[in-house]
Each structure stands twice: as structure tokens, then as C-alpha cells.
Image (cartoon, rainbow, N blue to C red):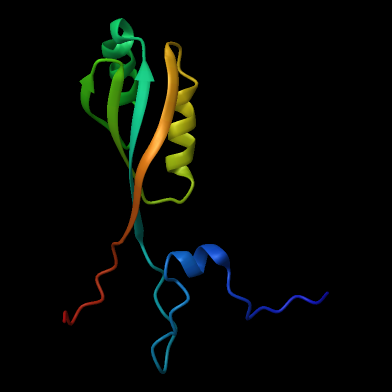
Length: 115
């Protein structure tokens, strides 16, 4: 089997990075912002302490605690960091589970000339 450099990478396709380059030049690298929300489940009496530890994780923000659930928003400019942070939360003492609820990718590039 031969490798074809023109093959489309799945991640590039899913994030829209396979769009054709503008005529006469190469495209600037895209800056992306990965945004996700998660629900972390812990014993109700441990939620405040768990939420405080989650809030110390870079790019993590605790939005609320209700009963045994902690709602968290995660942001990163690098693919894969969201999953790593979610795993970090899931492995914390007192945490039963950490589940991704929503994920979105926003383009941060300013292409100028606005439409």
C-alpha cells in the first residue's frame, strides 16, 4: 500500500481545515478554541472540595454544584487537552465519574476584511 500525501486527515476534515487555500498563496495556520462542558459526579458531601480542586485545573471553570453533580466548562487551544483534563478530573479522589456533555470548536483566526 502506498501513501498518498494528498489524502485527507480525518481530524482536519472534521475541523474544517481541508478547505482549499486561497488562490496564489498558502493558508495561514488556523487557531482553534476547543470548548466543552462536563458533569462530574461525586458524593454530595465531597462536592465542594472536588469543585475547588477542579477549579485549579488550567482552562477549567466550575459553573455550579447541585446534589452530587458538578458542572464544569473546559477551554483549550490544543486538541486533546480537553480529554486529558477530563481524565484528570475522573481520577481525583472522591470522584465517581466525569462525563463530557458538549463539545464545540471555534475558529479564532481574524481573516480581516469582514463579511
